[in-house]
Amino acid sequence: MKAHTMKKNHLFALTLISVSVLAGCSTMPQSTTLDNARTDYNNAQANPQVVKLAPLQLKEAGEALDRANAAQVSREDAKVVDSLAYVAQQKIALTQEIAQRKSAELAVSNATAERNKLQLQARTAEADQAHQQAAMAELTAEQKTAEANLARQQAADARAAAAQDQASLAAMQAQMDELNAKKTPRGMVITLGDVLFDTNRAQLKSGGERNVQKLAEFLKRYPQRTVLIEGFTDSVGSDSSNQVLSEQRAQAVSMALTNMGVGRDRISTKGYGEAYAVAGNDTAAGRQLNRRVEIMLSDERGVIAPR
Amino acid sequence: MLKKTSRFQLPQLSRMSVAYVLLAGGVMLMAGCAGVPPTEQIAVTKAAVAHANNAATTQFAPVELQSAKDKLARAEQAMEKEDYALASRLADEALVDARLAEAKSESAQAQKAAKDSQDASRVLREEINRKAQ
Image 1 (cartoon, each protein chain N blue to C red):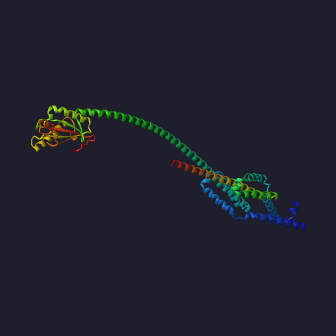
Image 2 (image 1 turned 120 degrees about the horizontal axis):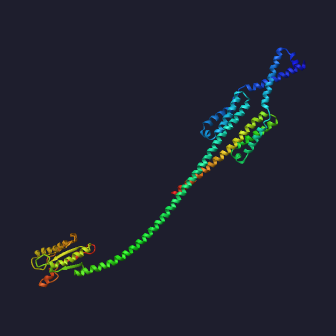
């Protein structure tokens, strides 16, 4: 009977152990780790980077979380629930790390691509610049050649012009000689004698027109020159009539030049009456010298020194 | 056994049956916890921890690496004490710790590389801009 009692006690103890083991499982403990794992999982799911770059790992983390939840629902030991929750939490953290790594790798390849693009652009720009410089150098060379040619041409032109000047100067001198031009302090003076006019007349005689014709041709040839036509008389007659007559004579020559095509703006006239006599009025020869028209030729700029 | 049973009264028999059922249940539950030794799991974890145990991980994820090592050591101790349930849980945890440590280290290195690469791009861009001016 003693042994029987002992056996009974033994059984009771075992029963107690069994109950206590079951009771240990039957409480529904709150797991902070599991709560944290759920929060972490929700955050990971809300993170588009994780969803996009670590979908497989996120699925595995979800499964691990499911296992932890299931363990809690089936009232397993808190240590088991916590351990499963811990595993889930670490797997969720893993998704974040993988997403970050992949994102960084993308950034590396993007930056590399950008660098390659930049380098290509830079090389293209350098090539373009070299091209441009070469073109510029070519242009400069051409320009220099052109300048040299121009300088040569100008030198040649200058020589030619000098030669022409010489020639034209000689030609002008010849014409001046023909016109009996005389050099005076005021410039070149051509004197048309009284052969042009009768006493008291302002009409050009036909013989004198030839001299005027030569003058007109000269003026056409040297268009920068102007003329001042000055009329003079002898002392026969009154001062006032001589003044008018001298003016009329100058006008007559001016008219003749205009008719021969010399511009009116190049001709000015003045009468001096019997003033500025070049010879005595007491002889017929002297009076003849005094009845005259003097034509002052301007310099090359059209300037005539005043009397 | 039959003989024994016949000697008990009915209510007693019933109480004994409940006790046996409970005992069986308790034993089964404990057996479920203890089960066969998770040798393979320990081996897998050991390999993972060894793989994670490198200079980069030591530098970039020291906490996770240390946790993995500690838990593996504790799992091995639990194996020796034949607490297979604890050994299995610790091995599970050590395994995810080791994997997280590696992932963290790789992520940190990739982020450093990204920063370097972006810096290089920026420097190049600035240089080109300077040249262009």
